[in-house]
Amino acid sequence: INIDPSFAVIVGDLTVATEGVLLADAGSTFHIMGNLYNASTRKYAFDLSDATVQFFRTDGSTQQVEAAGADLGPDVVGWTNNFAFGTLTLGGTWPGRISLTDNADNQADGITGNEAMYVKILTVNAGSILYLNGLNLYYYKGQINGTVLGGGGSLVQIDWIKGDANWDIKVDDSDLNLLLTGWGVGTEWDEGDFNGDDLVDDSDLNFLLSNWTYPPASAAVPEPATMALLGFGGLALIRRGRK
Image 1: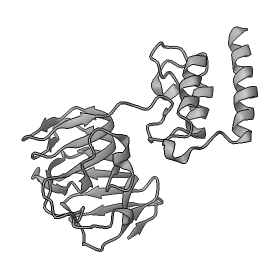
Image 2 (image 1 turned 60 degrees about the vertical axis):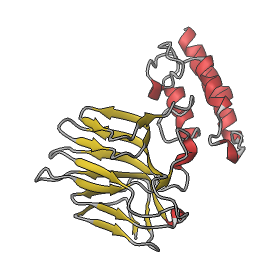
Image 3 (image 1 turned 180 degrees about the vertical axis):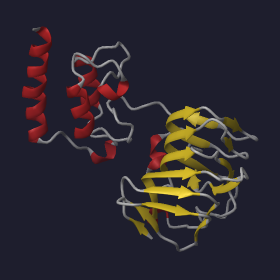
Image 4 (image 1 turned 120 degrees about the vertical axis):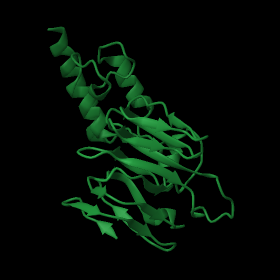
């Protein structure tokens, strides 16, 4: 299944078989009212890393969700070809109560209990319950207003990458644009304040450039147009701030 972001998908149970393919473009939304059974061993063919998945249930019962990713610890590499989620939300109008499971050998390595879940943005709304069930869940940005029960597992937040203003685990033009918009006036991370001093200035720009373009494997440098923006747009903002 390849989901188009122009509409939201509402399902009861969602099952992905061993050779199943589930791909979703950026901006796609799944509303799941049942369980997510994922037996896929095709980590390159299961990609919800830029999608939003919301779990809720009107009767308040617990939903089973497979943790399929290799447990690579608190490292951002866990979001690359590893059954990761983009935005994972529990609850909303109705509460969401999910229990992680490891019923399938998604890594096809014959080892049980070595899998985890990676989420870029995690929201556990009030009245919702996240039961880790002995498994680890690693997340990048989160808002936890509900209940988290470990059962021997851990909920671990990974440090934000300085320069990643929009929390997409990349440092690119979109982050630069947020920084330039917040230049001299921004006080928040998503406005370019990466060092927490309530001022977006050269030090924040240096953080962004030092991580350009993250992840490092791309070994990319800013395009000429981007460099011009840094040289002229940034300078103009600095001058305007001084005035």
